[in-house]
Image (cartoon, rainbow, N blue to C red; front, side, top):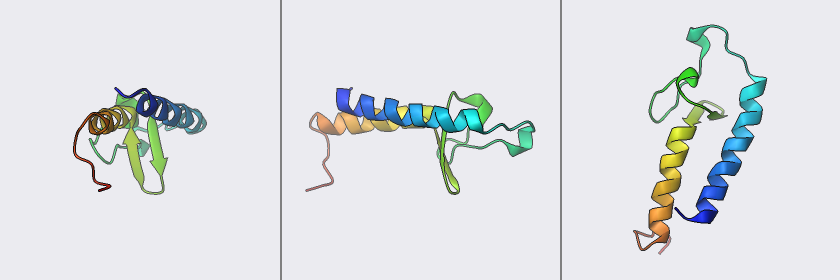
Amino acid sequence: MNPQAMQEAMTLMEKAKKYDELIAFPERDCELRCSFCGKSQSEVDKMVTAKNICICNECIGLCAEILAEDDHGGFNTKE
């Protein structure tokens, strides 16, 4: 994996940690769900949220891997 992409993913996860610690969801019905894989907040380590969209640390990791592949000769959408 590209070291820069890994660092960016880790930075996002650290920011998510700050917000995760501030938000408590005592009832299971109130848990956040990842907008991409559907896992609940209690099924993953971290959840990043923005307005009505959530993404879990596992999906962020997958995105980082996909971006790292692009850096190694994959499809480039910026051309």
